[in-house]
Length: 67
Image (cartoon, rainbow, N blue to C red; front, top):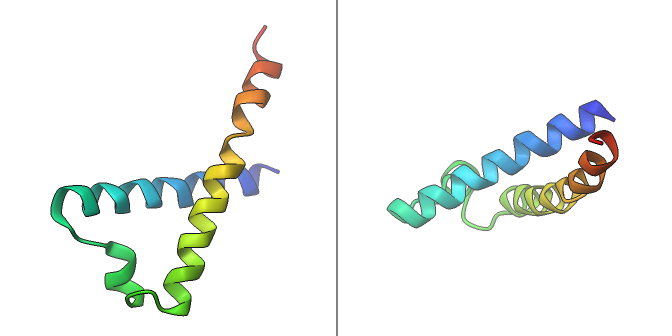
């Protein structure tokens, strides 16, 4: 489970950095590296979105571990 947690965290941080670059400089790093809405960039966007949804479960897990 830790591997999935770390993978989701890395993907979500990557997505956050990408959105920061889009907001500040209008520069889409994923599109730059993998093509503008190519199949590979779309897969990355989907994985980042799914990782963000998965990380929402951290709230319940944190509540279970902290008294």
